Image (tube, rainbow, N blue to C red; front, side):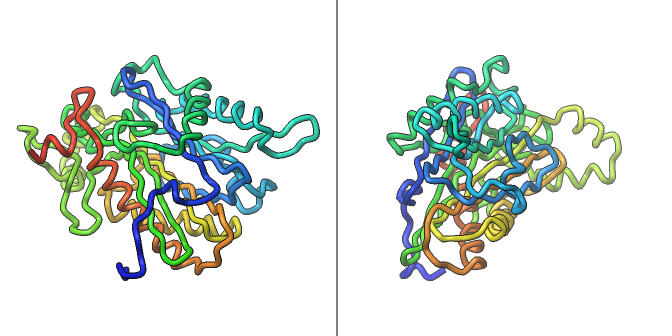
Length: 332
C-alpha cells in the first residue's frame, strides 16, 4: 500500500458512528458497542464452528431489514447476549430504530466471546452493562487492551489455560483520499497471534517455562499422529471466538458489504494460526456508514489489512491480568 496516499486515523474519525466500552474489571468481562443512529447497511460472515450471536439473520441480503442501528461485541458467552437489551433500551429512549407506529424498534446485532473461565463466571455482560457502553459511546473515546469486549480475552489455548496468554480489544483505521476503513476486534483465539507485517509470533501458546512460545499449529498437527495426545488436548480445551467489525464510509449494498465482511477474514487468516477452527466462533461484521464511492474489492482488501493491524494492536496494548501473561511482560 502506498504510504504517501494512506494515513492512519482514529477509528472514531469515521463519521456517523459512536463507539463505547463498558466492563467489570474484577469479573473479567465487558462489552463494546458500535452505534450508527442513522442506520448502517451491515453484513456478517461467520467462519468459526461455535458462534454465540443475536439477530444475525438481519444481515442476510434477503432479510427485510435495510439497516442495523448497532453492533455489540460482548463477553459472557451466550449469557452475554442479554447485553443487547440495554442497547435497545438506550436507542429506543432516543427514538432510534425501525418505525412500527407505536414506537421505534432498534435493530441490534451481537456476537460474544467465551470468557467465563477468566474471572467470575457468575458475572456476565447484562442489559445494564450494554446500556452503560452506549452512554460511554457519547464520549467516543474508547481504549484498547483490557477494556470492553476484550477484558477477558485470551489466546493460545490448545494445551489449556495454564499456557495461554492475555489478549484484548484492538482497533485500527486508515484513510485513503476520502475513503475511510477501520476495524475493531476482540481477540479470543484458540490459536496463536502473528505480526501482520513480519509474520513473527507475538502471542499465543507459552512454552513449559512460560518465557517463550510453542506453536499451536504444530501441536495441533501432532494430534493427527497420536490419538492419546488428541484426547488429552480435548479434555483441556477452553472455548474461543474472535469477533470483530469493519467499518467504512463507502457506500455499498447489503450483498456487497457482506462480501467485504468475507474478505476481511483474510486479516484473521494472516494473523491467527490456526484460525476458523471448530472450537472458534470467528465472526466479522461489516458496516457501511457513508456515501463515498469506492471499489468493492479495494475496500475488502483494505479491510483485511486494518483487521490484521487491529488484531496486532489488541495484543500490543494488553496488560497481564487474571494470571495470564501479556505481550509486553513476555517481551521484557
